Length: 141
Image (cartoon, rainbow, N blue to C red; front, top):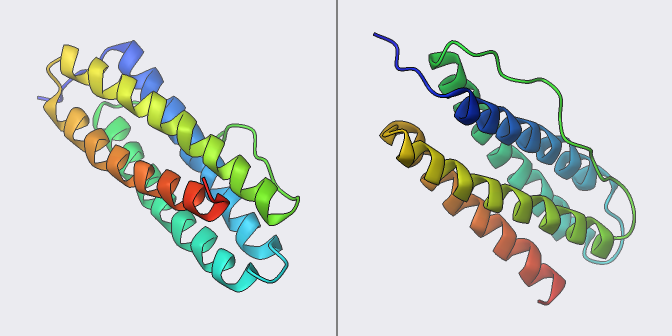
């Protein structure tokens, strides 16, 4: 028997995918576009985090597919360009939005007794917090 999730939870999971798709494209473009003295190390960071976000999107899509719901293919608005500081600030904001949403998803999944989704998002949340820490550290915050 396939577990059912509420429309509210599946909509939240699709919001999560839209954010992950945004992050993938945004961070990959930043990986390609970054210039300046720190560009080599920043380029690696952007690429590595983009790869993590791809894995998150895949896991979330698999969960939605389990619920017999098609995952969205439309990303949230993508912020590209600017100097390295502007890139890091845009990426920090994306991580903060994900962290807020994922905490809400964890609460919603728990309220629906959906331990698998709750555990999945606890794992992803931990990784998003690491990304946020990486970006804020690079910004000197």
